[in-house]
Length: 209
Image (cartoon, rainbow, N blue to C red):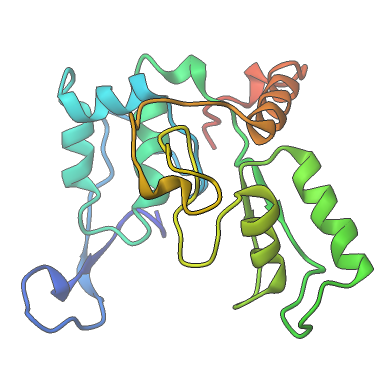
C-alpha cells in the first residue's frame, strides 16, 4: 500500500520547463481484477513477450500502462505484473542477473590486483548486468576494451558491422537482425541453465507476498 497507492504528478509531461515531481493527497485504489507484482529494474525480456505487450493481442498491457502512469518507480512494477498475470507466468526466472561490485573504486587511475580478481569473478558469473560502479571507474574502460570490444566514442561491435577491423568495423552496416553469439553469450547461457536446474526454480516464480 505504501508503494502502490501514492499518486505523483510529473510536470514534465505538460510544461515546457521540467520540474520536480510532487505527490498529491489522493490515493489510488488497488485493483481487484489482477495482482500487482514488483521486481528488479534489470530484466531480460523475450521477443514473444515484448510483442505481446506492443501488438495489443491482449488489452491488459495497455490497461496497466495507464494504471501506472502516475506511480513512482512504475518501471519496477510494469513488466513483473504483466508477466505474472498472463500466459507468460511459467516463463519467469526470479533472478535479476545482476553482479554487485563492492570492491571496485574510481579513486585509483589503474586497477589493482584486487580489482582484477573481482573483474574476472564478475565476468565468470555470466550475469548480464552489473552495478555499484562509481563515476569514471577504470573498470568500465576495461569492460569496453576487453568484453565489448568497443573503442572510445564508438558503438559496440556486432554481427551487423561489416567494415574492416583496422579502421572501424561498424562504419559499414549490414543486417541488424544477425546475431553471432560470442563468449559472453555462452557465459549467460550457462548462468540461465544453472538457474533453471535449481530445485527451487518453480517455487520462486511470481511470489505473492
